[in-house]
Image (cartoon, rainbow, N blue to C red; front, side, top):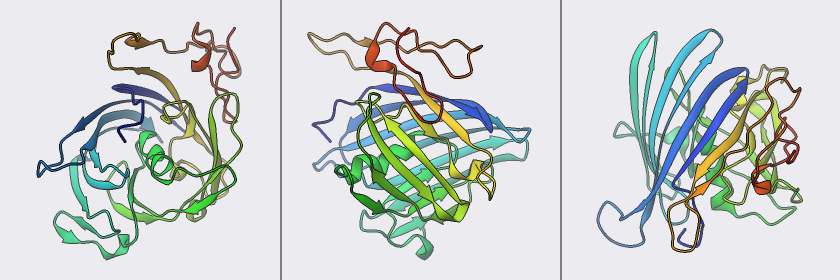
Length: 260
């Protein structure tokens, strides 16, 4: 984890089946018991409207040095009221929800929030797949509206890199859903599906997110700000007009098509 050049903040715009915005922060800190190695705390909020329902979900996720989820606090608000859930994991595939054993999650190493684009990146960091390699990696899947926790079987396959960064084939058979994920140099994502459940059983609806900004921690000899790409909202797909070409990532789901 220490070798990764992580931003201190990142943001995604959720499009199509869901309209919303997500902002997250990243902090490397000591483990709860104060012993090394340190852990990474991912804190964020998504606000969105989906199927005429408005909701907001906030999260605080702790991952260890191997990017395994060790804890997740999730809080949601909607017209139905407020809800919260607390998940704990031992890093070996055993989970507890609100302190009670959750046997249906045995073998899962990642949490995956329906409300979040960020959590798609956790298995990407953890698996570190070589090009051509494929891995089945079930996740503890937290629904957006009621925060129900389910087991989600999913598969990642590392494809050949594109001009926008690393490419992965993603599938979640229970939703009859498959897509391509594109990740930038921070592996935070440039164009990704917001969640497989945003698709119907035939896969006709897809909710897409675009990673539109991140802010790098201030370091000597390095610019503290990385500018976000902008796009022409009247264009069929976004037209990246960023002065930072590396921010203009090409994605199969409608990402920016390059500078200018």
